[in-house]
Image (cartoon, rainbow, N blue to C red; front, side):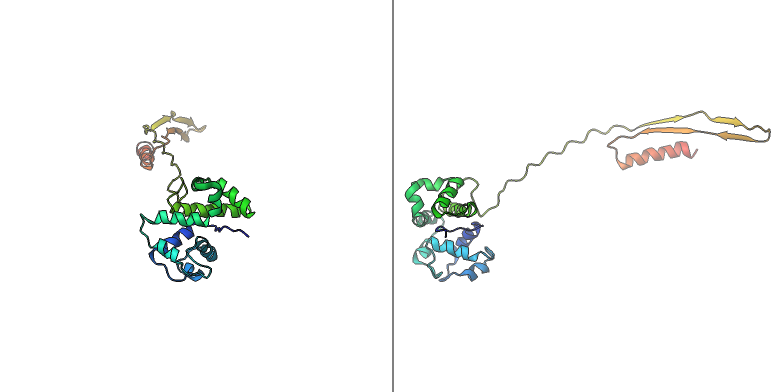
Amino acid sequence: MASHPYISGPGSVIQMIGYLRKNFPSSVTSETVKKFSLAPNNESYVINALQFIGVLDGEGKRTKTGHDIFVLGDDAFPKSFEGLIKDSYSDLFEIRGDDAWTLSRGELISYFRTTDKTSEVIGGRQAGLFQAFRSLAGYAQANENPTKNSSSKPRQTKPRAASPKKNAETKVKIDKPLIQEAAGPSRRDMAMTVRIEINLPANGSQETYDAIFKSIRANLIDE
């Protein structure tokens, strides 16, 4: 069994600490966590993490140390919380010293997996929780804030400017009337062929097309 706590979403622990800093009840249970809608079905992991750093005892009751630190203002809280984390992860700091505050995620995973004989998934969650704790102690590394979503947005490709509209070219070719005389003197047939070629602009609007065909109808077909 892992000796260091872990959770799939460390942000839930950080949020819970934020709530407790505003109002720290004498006892915190899984039901308390549920009321804040945090870590559904993983409430016990939040409690375990808080017990590990010593702000709750084995029965879920608030400790004096936890209360004294959580009531501190934003200026004094990080330094006191730093000492809390250093004591809780004493084995890590004994080996790595203050470098533990700046270890990469990969280095933390390696340490927890070696120490607790955990899988890569559990080791990653242990590392993630430690990173979350150290962020509250003022040692947040780049891209390590578990309480905020990344603000980076996918790069948006600038739309290409539409090519300048070209004037519509309308070519009308009218063949000469073809008159055919019938064999008999009393019958005369006449046939006319009109061929119209229109080159429409590719980016023309509907109004442009309507105007072209209206002009053709008015000047050719209706006559």
